[in-house]
Length: 253
Image (cartoon, rainbow, N blue to C red; front, side):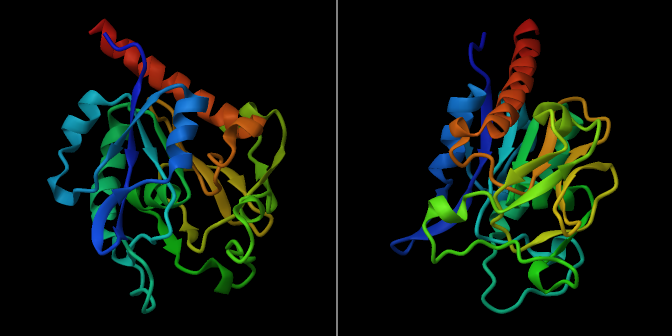
């Protein structure tokens, strides 16, 4: 019997003092524990060595974090990236197949920023590699010369689709969000429904049509100071509820 749901958290491969490490930002993990009320476990990016079926047997949710790395364009038929673009092929190889299987099996999925982009690619969508050079789009990148409190602060509003999941959670048609991304959705994948758009029309959130459980991706970072933001906290609470539902079904078996 499981008292608290267990949620698998995507990890990145990062160099620390010349050694490769599996890493995830503390703010992502803490938001899960504090706002969703679940037990996070970090999933190493083992690529093809990851046994998705075993991961999903022991976890009640899948949580996809943001990252400074970009999804490699060959996954969505894009042109090769510019020289110097940071990639994480092991994460791509681990997470993209896992997303599809998790949704198919009814495991709740919550995807943030890079995770949102991975989710679109997993279902057959494409990405703008540099949103700020696309005609008609604004620059959605953060200014890293500022402090985190500034560049994780509100950047623009998003319009929530009436009748959608986010509209119901927010109880409003618009909410303010932060913005810290260079890539963005170009072509939305079949099987995904738009939940929110930016002022320039860029898709900022979507859900999976007809999913058996919570399956939501957002382009912004609700994990930042989640306990101080009612809307962000409500998103994590809803994800936590879905994970508890999954855990209860497991306990019944």
